Length: 284
Image 1 (tube, rainbow, N blue to C red):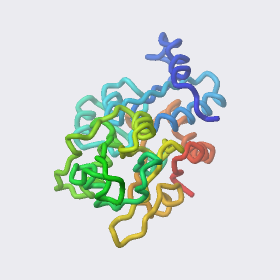
Image 2 (image 1 turned 120 degrees about the horizontal axis):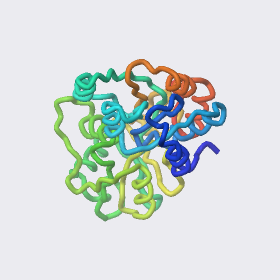
Image 3 (image 1 turned 60 degrees about the vertical axis):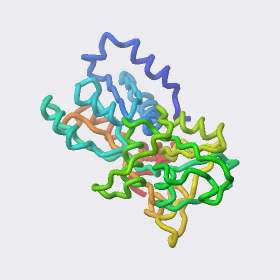
């Protein structure tokens, strides 16, 4: 109900290119692919109740969104990670003052093909798989076949978060990297499609992309801990180990019409849309 065809959304704004640069009620949102469906759902509902407002939503990754904010080519950058110090420094050099708003929460789901018998993994096992130290499914209780690693590309906030919190386990001094054999895909949907069609694959994405065509893995902090699936309840109660906030960044504190839209995303109606699109509201 909330998902609107991206082409139509963008097309509606492209027809208004003559006022994109100067129109007071045109909002450009760019960035995190994880957040695209959520931002589209918010935009669709907002435009229904605020005629005369036009919102264009495009992905490309968190880094791309922040780069566009710094260059002044979007009003809101969607990001599934915190802005980096070097990005803040570059923004400041260009007269941009990034302002952060937490708009939702997300659990990063690790997924395999439904035909794969492996149903649970520890954080150490995940780190071993994605760094290339574990190369065969039989090493973690699966079939005797090689593991095909799928990852988002390096510009993705999801890629950065997974590397920092799973591969490097939150250690700022760690230098662990994804296996050189990992296939870097351009979107969460591309990972979902590849996992659905290949029984040897393992990948990760925001849990809003989970469908019956993939099987989410239950994850434990270590071999002595309980395993938890990536569900809304387990993200809210902090039991699922791979969870993160999702952000909007604006240049300075948002002003209308951007402020009005951001306020809508944080309202009860906006947070109900978070839940309806399989993300996690920032409040119960």
